[in-house]
Length: 565
Ligand code: GLN
Image (cartoon, rainbow, N blue to C red; front, side):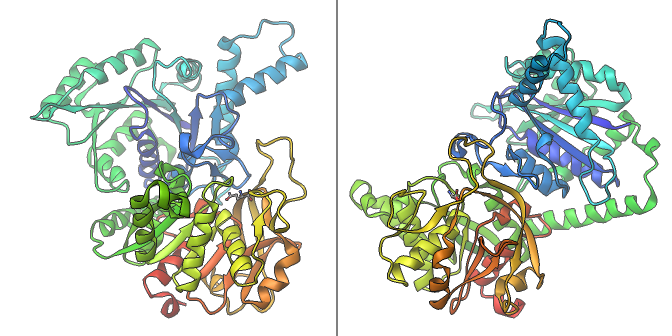
């Protein structure tokens, strides 16, 4: 029987439910258990694909092409698993499933209602996902962590809360428990910790028929003993059920903090985990994982030297828009013994127009770009900021500064190269300028022009290294493999008509898709590291296994690339 751990939130959203959910998973993995995760997003969108990164943060892409909430990225990175689109449940998905069944006549004339039809659909979905293997073992997971987005008491999440209330009886008390994540604000000049918001949110939770097994109290400082006792007393839980999760130096410390508090033993007893009889080899693999994890957290603490990367994008006002990118930089830097420091540059601030509207910003942005050890232009959509990105690519190319262009960033590198090296002065992308006379980036033929949602070239696809690429740095970074599988999300691509011209001038297309028609990786000759990829390597980074192209960028930016290859 699968064990379920629901993670709900109270008081405010955005207090780190995702990190607590992933950390719980990490702790259970350290026992040798197989763990999967579900994120419930109570919005009506079918998926995150059409949500603005500036509103909602990054759109994370899975192997199967699912465009999902960024929390699934946290789960994949923490738990080293591969999830699928159905691991992200939204109100939109549940309702469209139920409405489709209603139209088919499956409800046999019944009135279709939130309870029981929607709540049943949610529970069935959860059970279906929980049984799906998430790693190479091909075995069903032992534990499923369900993060309930939003806060308990919201109108939107009510059907999901009710579904979970029913679910605890469907699967039985010994297979279901709940962590409620709450906020303990620190107020006043003496920094008093206030418990009332937590009390109120636990009251809401109990009112909905759910009982917290652990109350995870997020606070800027460790919980005072008296505050913890008060929460225990007034929220009607034992003292061991109040878990203090204060701000720590990195997310990698959260599982360690939870373990110190005795969370593992708590779950062992509460969910009867010992009865699962985990084989010895899985247990020792779990222990080894834990050792690697603690040394990772420890080494993070002791990094002194930094590497600076200029991230030139268009959603830089919300850093979560690029969460997988900065995680990738962090993982790659860690592997190079550095702390990554990101200079966030809004591409429009590099453009001539900014010199007139905000000259200080303009000069600061150029100063950040020019002083960085490496330049990264991440993915993006639409025309705003394109010229700023082209200038950043030009700077990196001409000054031999390491450059990594991802998806749009690769298209930018090609536009810049066409304009300034190949003399195609009006070269452009058909995305930004549909009527351009020199389209070096064009619309992919098979993509729908009328439907935006879920119609891009999405998910895991193969990139094949071309003949005579044995000496390619990129290929070496991938360990010399003949082909690599990475995740995609794009509508436009490099126009194959111009490729031979670019190659003559030194921009090599070392990786293409299986048909040889679609350009996947560019690499510049006579440059320490100037690389672009049409896919998104950031979606597959792991703390202990950095994405190769990011690793290459940081190695080059710290002068270690040649010696490492
Ligand atoms: N807008 C570009 C395209 O659709 C790049 C997409 C991206 O960067 N993810 O091809």
